[in-house]
Length: 305
Image 1: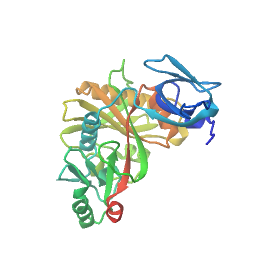
Image 2: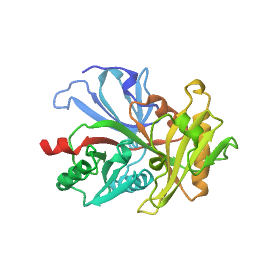
Image 3: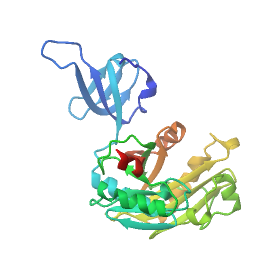
Image 4: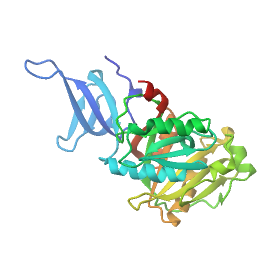
């Protein structure tokens, strides 16, 4: 299918896998693939590879484009980061069933009301028990599935990009105010009706709530992954609709990066819905790159397949 559109390409500089058509030749394959960093999209697609230099591709010959992490990411690294992230957004009740970490919070937010496979022992055998656990709490049994950790073919919903960077920053803004709990002003800007006990919940870690001059708010957590990495998680970033595109989100995140680094976090992650192009562009300009993807799948639906 011929779909020469820039919209299907990630930003220049990202690492990609591109499948494209070759000029037909006797005994030659009709399609081929190239993996490398995207250097240009038009008038020709340019991909710099590790072994062949720059490969030039006719945009009209491109069949598919998939963005990859900037470097090869092992499954163990995905599992470690997801473990730290689960501790940072654990809901108000948690339980392990096999290799699954189950969280509930009265239905407030998808992350706090889903089961994630954090141990290598997690399998689909546990699904009936997971469904029962959530049913007992009057909740749908959602699975939060990072890519590659479990073989599940279902497309799912809320496709998410997990993006990462180092925490090191030059300085922080004195205008960013931090507090242990969200006050009325923070909750007013956040707008979502999430109980304070859900927002402040963290397991074996620290949490802070950042406010920038009544223009932006965000939440920061520091938790430790099983491999020893101290991760800063930046979540719940909101900017007043009347004050967007003025650098407030970046300034707020810099304040949280400074806070996390001061508490021993060496790496930072954000979890962004795949269709939130504005947030993705912001985090890319701040040095965040794709680590892996995730999605939500109904455990009940899997049991009926």
